[in-house]
Length: 132
Image 1 (tube, rainbow, N blue to C red):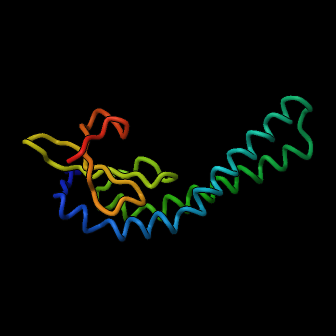
Image 2: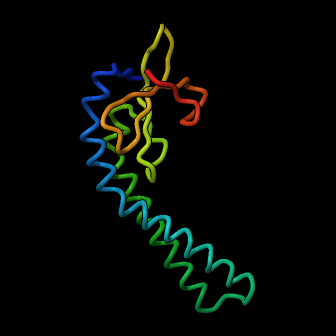
């Protein structure tokens, strides 16, 4: 599949929709983090005390984790279909493939930012983003 490149204006036009999408996914993302922590605790108990009841809890936690992950992926499907790269659901961080000075770069946006103000090279991440 060919890469779709976004203009700054085109990417900015999607901000409100992305904001709504990530707000809708926030409770699922939070639940996912809680489930990871519950699973970690259950695994620690199993390692120290053996299985039993905790094994059954762990199986349920893993099913809930899989279900929650699937719901998040379904919620992100329209974002992916547009060619937007989701870097972090938890932080609402995305990259828009774009062309800048004749080369591919990413326009970078995070939930809470009212406009796209940053970009970065495709081989670096959020920490190295630069002002447009």
